[in-house]
Length: 378
Image (cartoon, rainbow, N blue to C red; front, side):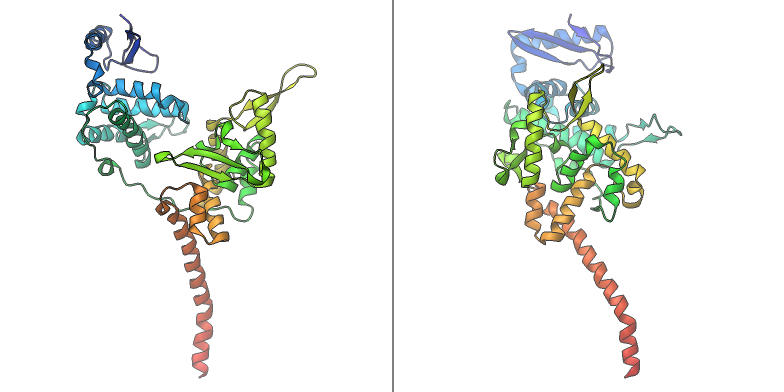
């Protein structure tokens, strides 16, 4: 029997092939005997062709197939894979996807909401419940593409799920921006090899994941018309931004060095190999490394406490606010940020509007005493 128990999972897994097709996933049980019985049942179903009806797949089988066909090629890597595992565990690995309803997902969401996490590095070992945004990302934003693929690509007949009703309300963060020496103070807390990456994010407002664009999506052959494709949106629409000519030259140099070193990203650091006359070696920078470095810098520089800046996403807010202030054009900001719906961009317009309101209040307050004195004189 081909059942085994991974080091980080409480459940036994199965993995076998029939007629060249691989079947693998979680048995949803924690003992070997029960796992072998589950595997025998799945083998019989596979041999009889019962699993050809995608609606009869378990959620774990559907998640494994989605990952093999699509998920593993998306940005996010281990983080995305971990989210899939959490979502499957919360709903139930053995749930038949043809029987997953809004109610079933809702139960899984409640289980995820109740999962306590202990911050191992905290001095007081505090326990944390996941935020509503974390629950939405782990459950809705993870399960929805899996079930949608089952319906559209595998032609599974599935119940309709009211995703909008399941999504928990998230507090919208107030956009913030760097002022005075804010940016320099933050940057001083980050090692220099991260600086070009952070500068790019601050100038162009790209998301963390979008920074790791595919090399072939960077077009710097003509500095006057340089551009980079950051991602594909729903419906096949592409989010492409133009690059300034001075940045195009820098990116062209990075692109050449990255390809020569066999790297998949233009973001790297130089590392000298040990020994006399050691050569310089390029080492790719990572998603997680940047995230941690900037988060720590925000705390050490005081920007987390004073402005609520928590990480690299603050550079996106800054770029949006600066673009709106300079251009007064919400459409330009929308195109830069890649928002499919301009409503998403309006949060920055409201922030700028608040600045205007405050300025008007200040003007009115300073003018009020003068007006009062004028009336008395009359």
